[in-house]
Length: 171
Image (cartoon, rainbow, N blue to C red):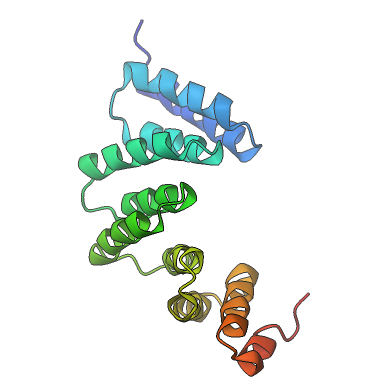
């Protein structure tokens, strides 16, 4: 039995709500159901990848995100997601290759710089991470996670004055 596009959209809305409430497995299952009837539906694949990633199934998420790069080769977000899956799987060098692809496609958001910074932090390349956290903060000065990462890198590089300044008004 085939589902209509409206039914598929409603299922994806339910899957999105499930994912937002921490029910990654259920969201993945519902996404897969939609994909059984609508193979290669980009929103369903994106939701499946996010659900797998949230469920710490990073290799599976990477496979889904790589499929998305084939379906929408000009979309930097898919390469960013490949990079994040690889970073979380403990493969920072492979993650940086994916982030380089995203950058070549124009990625320049706060999320992009923040995630690449986390990858450099994982590699203990504190100066590169510090520089990227700084770029993320330039786009969103209120970002507490980026500010904390920036301060952490400054401390690691013995730039204590900068680290302390980053944490002024920390709440």
